[in-house]
Image (cartoon, rainbow over all chains, first blue to last red; front, side, top):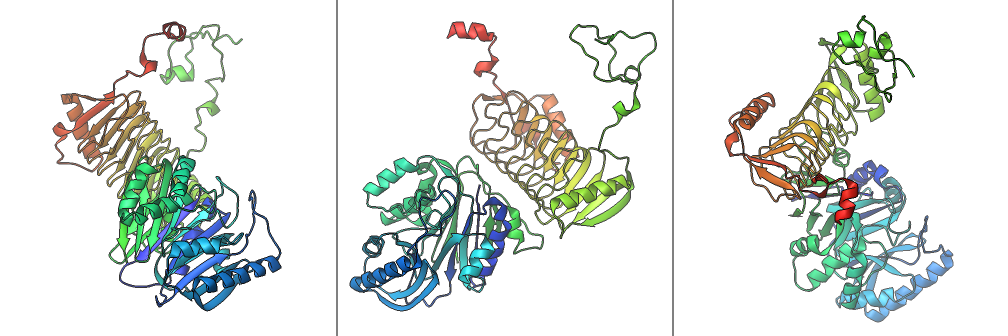
Length: 313
Length: 284
């Protein structure tokens, strides 16, 4: 069934890493297979943050395989070579796990061409590119993933996250949420539900040059919105189009560098509880997620069917 | 087969007016002896004293522990129980089958006060999905908003939300009354079979979709009617009932019920024709 959570501080920063960890851990019973975070951190905004993986962490039902670390290291060298060829200047690189990396780099050319070139390397996937987006996903619950990647000290303005129960595809990182809104910097999406016109939409979008990395139906939302935005739509316009363009049941969150949005399908088949104040918006699949960071008595509500909302930092 | 004919002496069931006719049909079976005292015992119920009051802080309890504690307090005769710090926990206050004043000082998560038969419940907060599902009797008042599937499949009692509710309120409702002070989402009264739903605010799309029977009253705008839901004229009886009920519900005291829209089942769905299944086959 999966659990999603998101929050945005308006006019200030906070420890969004720790807050989102609490919210997602409260939703663990909705999805114990993998957990993902899209945190919008207080980076200096000068360099791109590139997060990518060179291999998989494989769980039940995955079509991927675990490989030897030496294979990952070779792929990493190939990535470094490709980055150099593309004109990217890496100013900082971190190895987070045997299969995932975080780079800070200077780059001023087309991100779509860049992404295609990097992902042409076998089994290399860009998890995210952005100047504030830090997208982390891996197998395990919220606490396990947070500890593995050191997320509980990340200061930032907003973030979205996902606790996944694998139903439409296997347990692995490529199928975990959030999904990056390729090729847009700093765009991420999490989803609770099932999309029934995935393949139709995927064929159409691939013909338009968009890329899919997994067979997870939720990835369609990120690609759908990215394609609309590439054609000039605002985030909110793209989200409103998605209510009729996507078939199935869904509640999803999308975040950009300075905004957070939610959309709920026209049947309101998936839950969402929302808390909104002047300086904070927090939302999740269940109220206990919000209570994990706001234990005092607060007013919450369920957004209605077909509702789209966007908040700015 | 047991002989179901009775003599001159009235059974306990008959003396209580539970049934008066003598059952003689061949297919009737006697499943229990109505004179045995244990057959009149409602398992899981307690005689409580409303003046005996206590508080229970469930902040550090799982829902199972909290519900067991409520049960234990009722067994000690407490008739007024105030629950502190529910903090959105799921399935609190379920399965209470006796009279009780139950007050939650805070919000509930999913499936709160489900399958109850008699208690008076007040939630000084919000409730999540499927509040009071399968409620049979009693009164539940929610001071703030409620999630989707509010009052799913209730059989009886009064279920009141002073704020707004999500989608599918009163889905599969089989009796009782649901009253909403604010707005309601899509598919309100979906497949309802009996009972009444009153919404003072606006309601979303597909109102009363595939409803079999029952009545829905709407004070505000209607997004759209669902399949087989039709408008019906308001009568004086409707208005008198609404005024009385809104007063009991503590909301809408001054609400002009004459301007409400009454929605009922059109009963035009295929299963409402007069054809037997075999005749239907022939017609096709």
